Structures are given as structure tokens and as C-alpha cells.
Length: 411
Image (tube, rainbow, N blue to C red):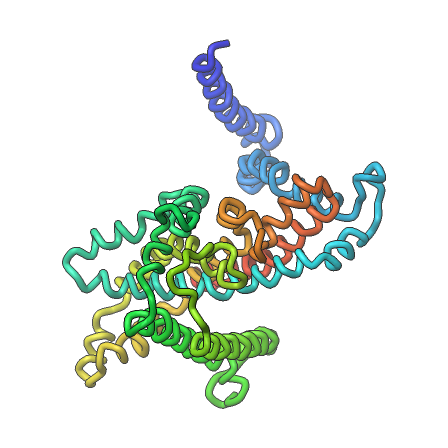
């Protein structure tokens, strides 16, 4: 059969089937099951109206159960079975094997690092872009440029940045932009400003931002008279505080390392093989893509702030920084949380960038790529399914939190 004819028949059968289902199910409900006639007409009409929404939702519920619920339960079953034993039940053996593998813990560490850096950087850059582009005449054009990476697939963006990080042998011309810039440094004032002072300032800003967020979470526990806190949020506040302290320690250690590092000037670097830092080079790709998303959402939130509050703050003598941090930020805090958690969901499932650029080599493994390697390279469906369940376990609380916040805002 010709593909065009096959597509036409598919459309006709699909659309016709949907129309037929809704029409005949409605007729069966009103004419056969609960006819609107006789002594029980009123009761039948009420019952039909109660059942009708569920009758119309039934195909969607079945489809969601088939494409969402079934894979979850199937993956859970595979995670407690062994393929080499003909699918025999082995309990938690796959999870024990996974927990004993160094690559899994490497993936967990990297995922946590991605989880901290990418949502924070994307949200911060998006908020900065939203604030600045709303104050210039050509802001719409600037927003279009910043949002443009959202139209590029993760693999396409990875190919672009792989060319930026490209390294050629010494006797060949370097086509990688980063190496072309790197080779221009040979010590002196420029190298000090760009390679030492600028990164130190960025790390100090990052540490200050982390300290501010951690203190905002921990402060209600130290000074409970200022704000009433719910008991269930105490563990979350402790985790954020401990994580913030650890990140501040890492920032200070990195600053100390920058002050004493000996840079290999004049040598082209294979950026994606440098331990620890190569993960940040991969994160840049996702930050570049997600900044546009954060900018659009936060720009809409900033435009929704009542002008009266801003004008009142200016009349009271507030400077632009005070207006932004004390007036605007608190009013869009809910939107910032939504953007942050949405990007967090993307980060927890990140696969394309790592697979296309390093395939998890040189210490860049993440959970989704680890799952792919176990399922399709090692052919170990037990450990692969166990890692998939770990990803779902990490994603689920954030999904619940998003739904909770959405319902809270609706109320």
C-alpha cells in the first residue's frame, strides 16, 4: 500500500474511531443504561452525568496506563529478576550489584553536581536576562537570540560544543574556539585577569549565592520567632544547609587551587578529558539551552509585578538593587521555584549531552547514561532496570513538589 494512502486511512480510522466511540458511548449511556424517561428520569439523568466524564476519559486512562503505568511495573519487575537465569526472581541482588559498582557512585556524584550547578546557573542567567532585556529597546530581539538554543536538540547542541572544545595534534591548526583562545595566553596581565582573577570572582559570587540560599533555608530554624515552619520541612532545610556548607567548602578549595595552579601555556588542551572540570564543560551545554526557557518564564513573572509596589519603593529611596532583591524577587519566588524544579527534572534525566560528547568516559558518567550502558551495551537488564528505578525515585519527589505548588497557586 502506498505510504500516503496508508497515512490517510490511519487518519480516517483514528479520527472516525474516536468520533464513533464518543457518539455510541453517549447513546448507550442515555438510551440504554440510564434512559431519561419514566419514573426514574431525574435520577437517571444525574447518574448519566456522573458517569459521562469517566466514560469519555476511559480511552485516555487506558492509553496512559499502557504507556506509563505498565512500563513502570515492568521495569520494577525486571530490576528484581536475572536475565541469565531465564528471568528468575533474585530479589535485591541487582541493586546490591549496582551499589557495589564504582561507576554507579560516579554517576550519582556527577548527577548531584549537575543538580546543583545547572538549575542554579540557568535560573540565575535567565533571571538576569529577563531583567536586563526588559529595560532596553531591542529587548525582544535579544530574547529571541537567547531563546534560540531551545530550538536545537540536545544532540545538535552537543555537536556544536564538541567542535568548540575540539583539539587537534600539535602540527595542525586548532579549529576549536576554546583552544584557539587558550593558545593566546602565555602569562602576563591578561592571563592573570582571565585565568585567575575572573574565575576567582565567579567562584566567590557562586559561594555567596549558595550561602544566601542556605541561610534563607536555615534561618527559620535558628530564629523561629521570625517565621513559623512546618515540621516536615526540617529535614529539607538541614539537607540544604549541609549541601550549602559543602559547596562553599568546594568553592574555597577551588579558589585556593586557582591561586597555586601552574597553567600549561602554549599547549592545546583536550578539555573533555580533564577530570572534574570536564563535567562543567558538559554542563555548559545544558545551561546554554535552558537559560532561554528560564528567561521567558521569569520575564512574564516580572511583567506581572504591580508597578505600584516598584514605584512606592523608589519613592521611599530604594536603589535598583534593593528594588530587585527586596521588592521583585519575593513577588516572583513561586515562579523561580517552578523554573528551578522544572530544570531539575531535565537534569536528573540528562543523557543526550553526555552520550554524544563523552559517553560517560573520563569520569563524566551520569545515571541515565549508566542505565543505557547497562541495558544496551552490557545487556544486563537487571542492573539497568534498577538504575532506571533509581532515576524514577529521584524524580518523583520533585514531581510531587511541582504538583503541590501548582495546586497551592490555583487555590
